[in-house]
Amino acid sequence: MKSLLLALLILCSTAVNADDELDARFGKDVLIIVASQHACYRFDVYLALTSAQRARGLMFVKEMPATTGMLFVYDDDDILSMWMKNTYIPLDMVFARADGTVASIARQTEPLSLRSVASAEPVRFVLELNGGTTQRLNIDEDSYLEWEPGNDER
Image 1 (cartoon, rainbow, N blue to C red):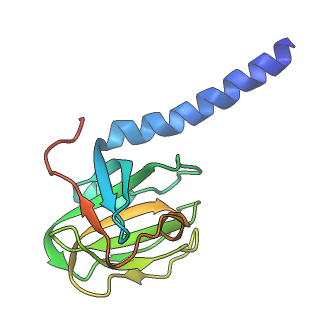
Image 2 (image 1 turned 90 degrees about the horizontal axis):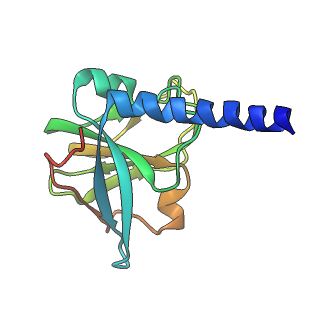
């Protein structure tokens, strides 16, 4: 019994350390996605606001809660390109314009791939969610993101 308890404690502390590392590197906030069928979904998002944070992204993350994601925020609209280097989980990448409307979505991106995944047009934001989330929640190009800059919990 003691060995089982010890194993569970080690397992739990490992998971906490991964979250602690993200918590130490990124501010957090709440983002709402209004799907095309007017359903609203709340996500807790890590904010990648600086070049260093955007370069780090979700690399080395082995699992992420279903209602968690990462929002990459840029100062200007541009064709944005992401890759999955050192990213162990499949992701859906939601490319959004400055007004929050969804421009394009890359679904179920390939873990550890060096292939570039780009937006279909100039965008301001990239929201990364667990792979399959956009299909499961019917998030598409008629959806939009609601997020107020400056509310991060850091």
